[in-house]
Image 1 (cartoon, rainbow, N blue to C red):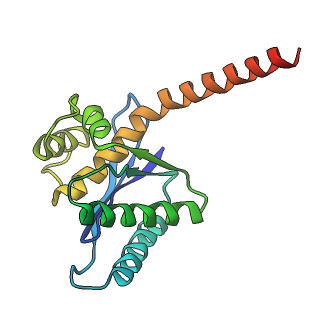
Image 2 (image 1 turned 90 degrees about the vertical axis):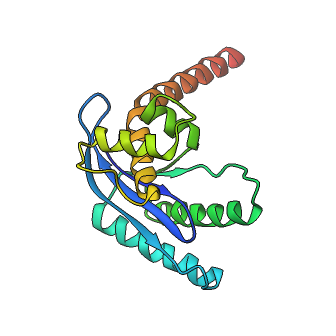
Length: 179
């Protein structure tokens, strides 16, 4: 499975592509940051993020895009920008028919480090180790994007089994009501 991880942000939108399957060594195919100038107007910045993400989608052709789920922060301005960048990532993937998965920051940290309260340095260190890199990806947004992709690859098999079980239960319940 090839996954593009996106750590959304208006100034720095982290992107990283990981390929592999759960239980096997993973491979980093690319990592970087889509940047926009902080002094540009919001429309220009969103178009810049869209163009950058489209280039990543063209270059790596992921099977899925994993985006960090926006959570409530104290700074409304920051959360709005993050949500807008997140929406651009979801739009770019959906326009191409690529499935999108959302993962919370604590879910990603727990998957990669074993602790949902891990700090940026711990996430970067584990991403470096898991992908057999010589140094942690910089900036932290890039490492976070790779962590999102890793999280999805590792959690997708369990999530798929859970979704199948829920669907089967719903089918059996529906049959019971029609009998």
